Image 1 (cartoon, rainbow, N blue to C red):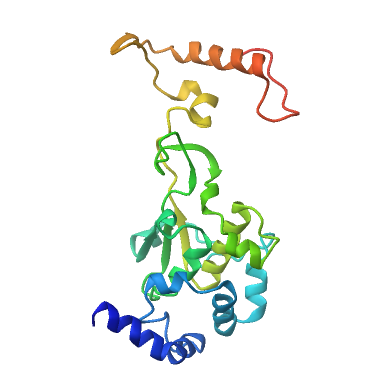
Image 2 (image 1 turned 90 degrees about the horizontal axis):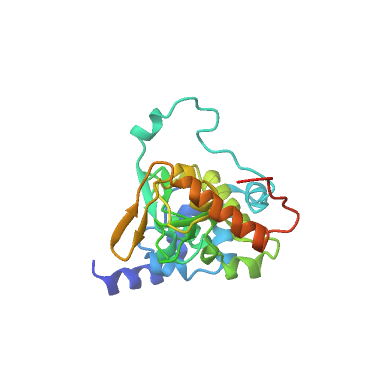
Length: 240
């Protein structure tokens, strides 16, 4: 079936296909293209989930103070990861966290787990794999979701309810904890001793000694003494 035929089939049969999903007779919405799923309004998406899962659990999932437990809650080993069938989702590709929920309507239950590619604040070159901090990337905030639910006014709250909804559908959720960082990240500047340092003049390395991080600590501390902390109410230590 070609692209126009897929779109046409969905448009003609959307009601029947959606009913089958809501009643538990199918695990996803076949023939729904991801691009069409992303166009669904919040109200339509939630109506589908309420019909399938019940109003109570969806209300709980939309409360960021609540935590819908993972299907693996209480498990003491990681052996499950050897057997799970995982779908990876690049949130930047689909623009925001809320669109993860829309996209999963196109994913069958054979994919029991969702792996979110890096969600952290990116660094100077905007690479998702060169994180600047452990803050959640603000570009993944959904204005659409906020306009529908004004209490979901931060990207962190929106991520929480998305994970809740994924758990409610029976899926586990994983995410990248990246083993490297942007060169000017908070992680580097806050922990110089955990990183390798070198000094250079033009293209020549002039210093690469093992304890060079101590000079970096002094430089960072000197800057903080001169400029003050990033947030009010944080006291500087007596020395670096």
